[in-house]
Image (spheres, rainbow, N blue to C red):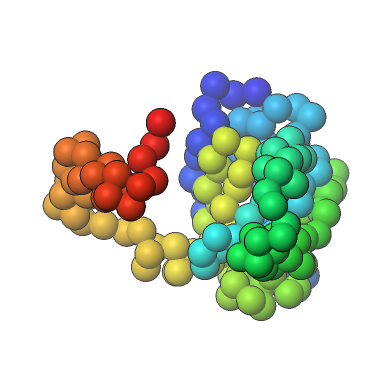
Length: 162
């Protein structure tokens, strides 16, 4: 396993919705987490690709919630609706299920963003539209975050982080 738990890659989609996972991405994962993944809806305009370990943690969290609360039930059902198990082939390729490709406009190129065992998969154009910033915009956002601007908004909402 690599010391890095984060990474960014742009990858072309092969025939039939196959994506070759970058070697560097796979090396960033525990050896046990390199072959089997769960594809789920993302929390935004992207698909999530979970390692089995991160998916189990997500399911443990979902299972801890009160299913009698309608919003939780709705979230849980929406999250579980299209979940699909995928396995890497001998060339480290996975096939993205067609419903995900259509729903999230996954076509020629994707951005893969690794974040602690969770991999966001974005349509490349959509990702850049959403996150590309000028140096000035990045600096302004950095200053806002480090000034505590977002923490004070959480305090006002009663959602202060520990």
